[in-house]
Amino acid sequence: KAGKLCRKVDLLEGKKSGVIRNWSQYGIILSGSQIMMFKDDEWFNSKISDLKDPSKSTILPTLKPDVILMTSDSVALYDKSYTKYNHVFRLVCPKGNQYLFQAENEVEMNDWITKINYA
Ligand code: I3P
Image 1 (cartoon, rainbow, N blue to C red):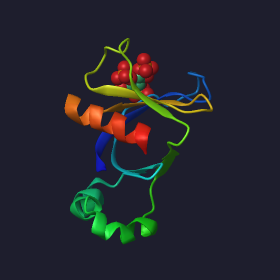
Image 2: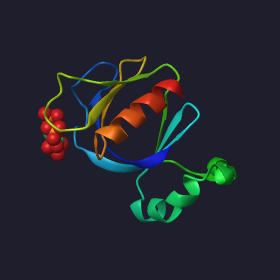
Image 3: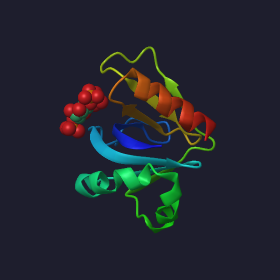
Image 4: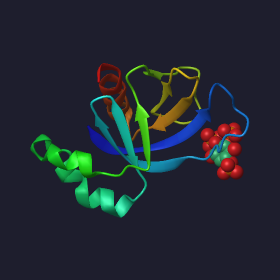
């Protein structure tokens, strides 16, 4: 799956202090158990149709993501107690890191949650 999400780092190793807390938008590719994150919006827009086409997956190894998150031991969940923004899900990672991701709408949010958890 590929698309765009806004991300905020909520906890690093379980701690809130010292964390840069702003939201920023990334182009995202979920491939296997990796979330690859790209800052360059223009580049991502120009590539997005290729990235959504499984027959062009040969380009995946050549990509240089700005951030990579491994999802194999992580859980994506909808956090009911989080009410500040809509369509936000939480990614909880084994070392205590937690990220908030905001999707465009509820359908997209649920799709990301499902695909991350079953990747
Ligand atoms: C943060 C920024 C975030 C905000 C965060 C602020 O300030 O305004 O948008 O998160 O609040 O610390 P800065 O840009 O100076 O880093 P929310 O929009 O999610 O509230 P927080 O510290 O309460 O997470």
